[in-house]
Image: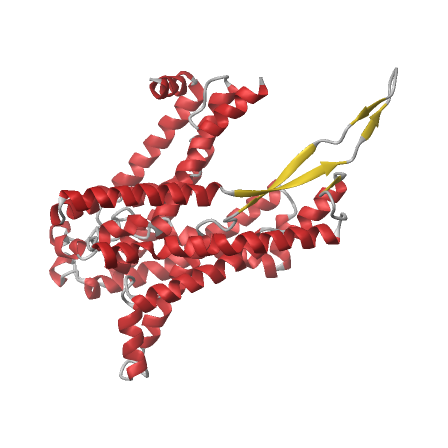
Length: 445
């Protein structure tokens, strides 16, 4: 009853209600576009092609991120992933390119210029990925008869323009959701795409397994979701003391320094290490198939071992890369030196630690200590789909939801969206959707 009452409170807030309706409307447009097949391709002949992605594997993972648009040869076949790739590249370039570093320090105006650079880079990536996708359709299993007008230059040029436009339009939808809706638009589009393949994957698992086994799988799935939530939200609180000040007026009084905390996240890098590692994992099988290596024993081993995302060597390498990239991404996104400088300028200090360099070293040491268990935990979640396939015999398409990028994106986006809705409720003096927000409101009374 309390949950229903909270949902009613959500609907009572006009601004929040409008934002939710805008978000749902834009998501409906995105899902509709994922079903629109490219002009010149016969949709009735894509059944066999689409079926190849239902069994999971690397193709199934690509299809999951686009919500089935990849297998549908849709106008949104590239999804939002080119924008994600461009964002990652720009973020990494900010470390080495002085111009981007300067823009980063310019505040809102600099952020707008960086966003514009990201958009142009997205178009550049699309211009590479779109022709590659079109040329690879027949190799992936689309019959020649499916190309109604034939594979003419006109078809490739027009389809490339449509695919690039589809990606840019999806990017625009994501930005509009962020501005006018609720939550992070780009992340929500990815999450909705992933969830779109969930019912079919579960139905296939239900049809091929006993009811008792499916119930056991559901229990394990919910446990993994809870552990993923803990990983996303876990923080190490570093106590901070601010210097005592004296206020003068009619009489002097001491204002004792406030005691606060610096929250250092156990997994400060989020899902990015898995995305980096996943991108690298395509390289060994590609190298094994090049002309000078595909006939050798090493090349054949690389093709067989790294083309199966549920294989042993694939997952050992995947886990190690995830741990390495967790340290790398944490190092470039958590500026301990800047945190120490900001703390010193504001008159704060960590008890027992001198302000300045020693504080930066202390924060860096703490981050290194908590990143180790965080990275190992993240690596275990990354390879957990392979574990359930090996030991429980779970269908590969359903196994993708037991860990890896798919699960962490769903958990992270859900938590972020709930927190935004919670802030609206608490600002209007309603009970929040999340226990933490509700308890905080009570403690402030």
